[in-house]
Length: 347
Image (tube, rainbow, N blue to C red; front, side, top):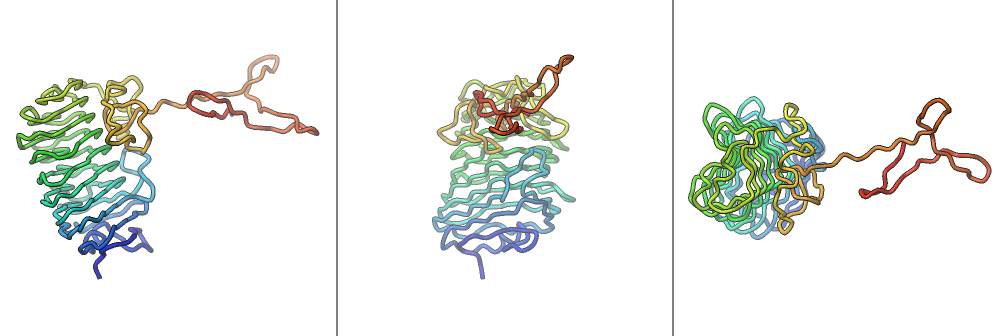
């Protein structure tokens, strides 16, 4: 019997489903909301799911992990190694509704998907892709239909190859593409970070593209609006409308570029140079609240200061335990001090 409503799980064992494809292939026309929680862990997929064509009927499909990624390299959270050339997710569903996919990682396996995700539904739906990782594949997201409203933000796309784009948009985009990070888009053809194939008005803000073989931003000069984007070439300044874009930023802004650590370095150009988009969302890739607005998926995180209590031994300063008097004896007690970022333990 097809899944039409309710709460389900994907787990390696003991869940409602054991594969990504099995969940999507079991959908029927919705009679209520569907929530799918995926156990954090590594999964291997050998068969691509069928295209999602079912009627949403005004309801929501929400897919999320039991624990979100804690690193940017694709080694944590719910992650799927896909050994096929088909789509990881293709939406061509009918009727209004909402589809939310968040915190999921796609990893290229033994074969390469031509498009990891493709959206060509003509229904007036809302599609939200956030806090996801796409590592490998060819084009990460292909947007073919202008009917939905898209919220694509706080995602990481890297190591796309062959005929590769981070996002290829064939329509005038309703919604926004914001605070995504694109790294190392390369291959046999010259493709781009974010590419448009239509002269339509679209809003692209706070996106960070580093090292695309083609243009970091392509075909955006006729009608698109771009604010506070960053490119390692000069194309972040090619938008028809917008301001405060950062160009020719060839130095890596990342903490560990070679290790796929795409957190921002202190003092790197994206830090503090984003546009405040708190009317749309307030968090970053890790779910942390953005106190200042940086460019890219990961907000800059200042290191937590470390304090060590030391005492003079008569010859040198040495770490010591803090003790307090209980009324009958001295007992060791951890010391905390209050700083501008909260209580800090002193070891």
